[in-house]
Image (cartoon, rainbow, N blue to C red; front, side, top):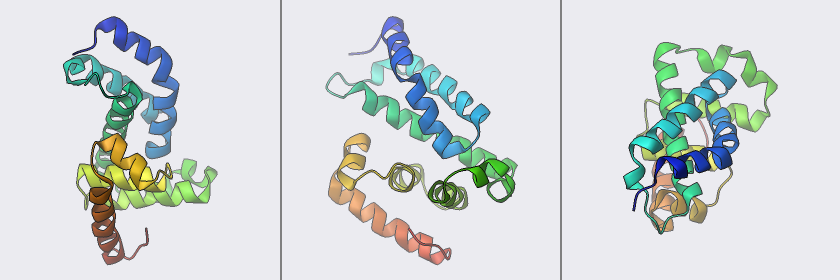
Length: 161
């Protein structure tokens, strides 16, 4: 069962502020976060047939938002390799969020899309393994294995997760 334009418009009205907050946590810049919001809802329009009726709409929105925002971080890292260290907006945020964004920036070329999503949900959102599993449609055991593998990669890069 797909969603129509009116359904997507209703999701926009309800979730655009949440998408913006989520994107801002990941990308760290307001303008980039609004770009993410726009792309998220464009993707939803183009792939509305992919929505499963048994899924919660917020799960679908959250997954798309995470993927689009992480792709934006990855693209910025390629365009601006020192962005994480020189962007003054990072200094204004809480230390945990700053460290999480910088970690995502460093890992953006080392991890695949799912691994980056797991790191973002763990470090930025503070979600449990069960919550992450529910959002990604995976088992908690798979998320646990992913986190173990990610920790190994992070340690190899000289960091901690």
